[in-house]
Length: 387
Image 1 (spheres, rainbow, N blue to C red):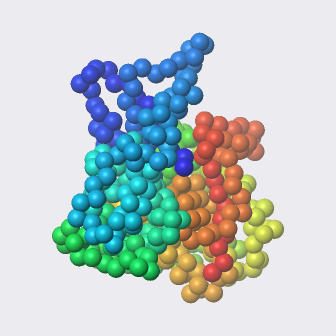
Image 2 (cartoon, rainbow, N blue to C red; image 1 turned 30 degrees about the horizontal axis):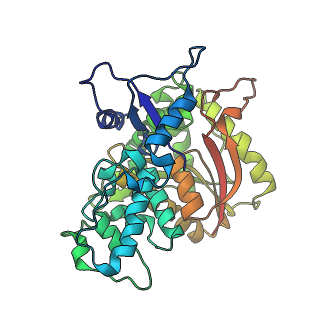
Image 3 (spheres, one colour; image 1 turned 90 degrees about the vertical axis):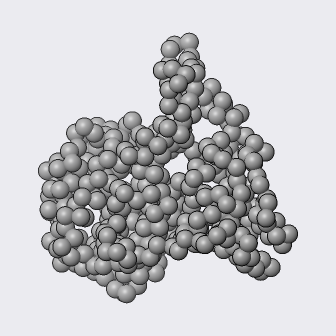
């Protein structure tokens, strides 16, 4: 499994801890982009003065059990678990320990909350897929709705495991319920704010173009797209039971998309996406209107916790499929640059990967490489799902 790491030197012994730094980063970095912060006394250097990245990675692997079976260093507490659940509990606890590695913040028990242990949006999905690989079935929405690992254990399905009230550790918090509402003009301010905040502050691609991109560029983009989005009636917002708008998904018919004139540096992003998508649309996807639903953009409200962020993204992914089926589309086409949506699409929804592109290889029409500073692991994945 890939891990995003941040090696940090603090100025004094009483400086911030790794958890303090991670907490500070939550206000500026999307949860699925949150690195595991590792505080170092010194940063190893090569003879030429550059950072010795291999030494850093070796240090991380040595301290993290080589990124795999790290449960030998984590404290696993199997207290109050019925005998018939022990095997499942071992699998769950060891999987959590393996996924979280050295970022684990406390003892693992049935009273532990996955996110308080150090989990985030991305590795919650990865934990679900690892459990499924080991024969224990639990859905993403079920996993993220659980308040404790005891709740998770109760929801892990196996033919010979039954629910046991002792594992609930008190009253389980009900999963938040969301509802979709087709995009309306009254949503404009809230949607523009979510798109701006999500993409200007935290987007995987757009951040490499800073400071050439302004927050106002997203307002101008939404102004250009707004009327066509309303007219096509394929986009929606997500609201809580109290009516708070917490997510938005913007969709078009891939073969009936209106032209959008972009006068800002955001044109670089859209040109990049067109570079990837146009050959696929022309040669690999069904032609004609009403065939391909194009998932263009998704955003969640900045107030969402990592757990809520997965809930809302997961809900939107499900709703996109529902709209595609209701509208008689053959399938859904999307390009994911977020590791969270990539993982959901591939591991949970079984999208077919049509193109897996290394972002920093892109050469713009003017000969520049706008994403050259992106790491090699940053990908753009074009995906297709028959519905």
